[in-house]
Length: 156
Image (cartoon, rainbow, N blue to C red; front, side):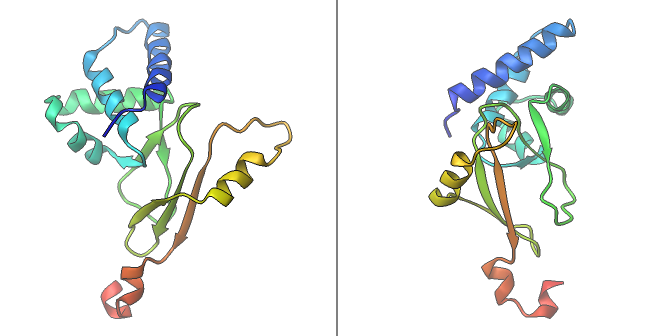
């Protein structure tokens, strides 16, 4: 999966400013993790990101410290699916992060990304009073095809 260079550059500048303001030093491990986050196209859990970074051979402490730093720097933000998800999910939070649309099953938690040109155009063309929109997330909740096919007894 290719990294979006514009997205990475913006996130990296945000990170650099944050660590510079706090007298911290730069870390190649953080840059690796940030690059992997910029490759992801949808919200992720910490364990999914850790698995995605496994080939970088980072310690668990380094990984979680970097993730916490990205949250503090507001590069990554918590993502709320709203259906009682137990594992915390995160998504990139930069001014150039892509708008995205997702379908979320309230029964099993399956997600699917989708794109609707009509909705996208409608949101982009809408005039917001005293607000400059940068991007958006549209989440549609419902019941997936697999859960609809299951008898009620098996769903629980």
